[in-house]
Length: 301
Image (cartoon, rainbow, N blue to C red):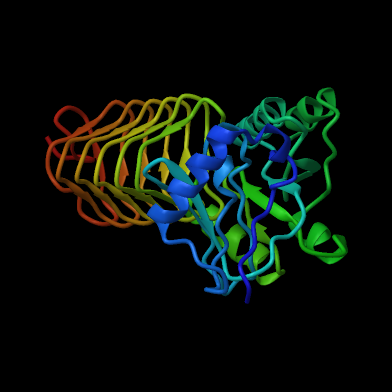
């Protein structure tokens, strides 16, 4: 499949001579070639990266990613991009925070980049339905209702904090032909050599430094920090103000509670939990919950 830029029209008017020179330098650096099956975002967008919606779409068998090279952004996929219509799965607290991220992206862009169709939720509480109504956000019914009647692929983001539930929901939507959106709040920052997987949401104040891989459907809550040379697996939840130090491996399905800390060069095993305000000073075994300072397995003193 021939590669092609997208979102170029929204930014072409802002392109200056300096942008063109930067484009040429980035093309040389990234070795951009047409027809290689990848799609690279137009080089001038690297200068305006806070305005990019950080989206990538493809069928369930592709692996869409966002990658920030030194000095620029690369978006890669192996399929055509779909429209910017998006639904949020989950109408609770984090689901509404995801809506905040979308609204912030639209406000920062020259033109709105997302059309929020509404919220899908299998058991939306009455108070949350009222909160959505106050914001004029449509409730679209259950996931089964939506998947049966949506009429075509849309982007989606899962606003459900529990990693195991989020994994099941993402599978259902991928099987229905829908693709996870990458959503980064305009105030989130990234260093060089950062790769972010489909479905990941980064809220306000997130700090991602250098040489970091973030997996699919990861939740980076407000003011999370991820240190250099760290790998974060799929379906991880890093709750507000969690801090992951450098050279760490956080395996899939991990949850780090509010203010939780993982010190450098540690591994947190699959489906483990680091409790709120806990400080992990040694590796955490898969499926283990650790609490306290220093963090120890729950029930252990």
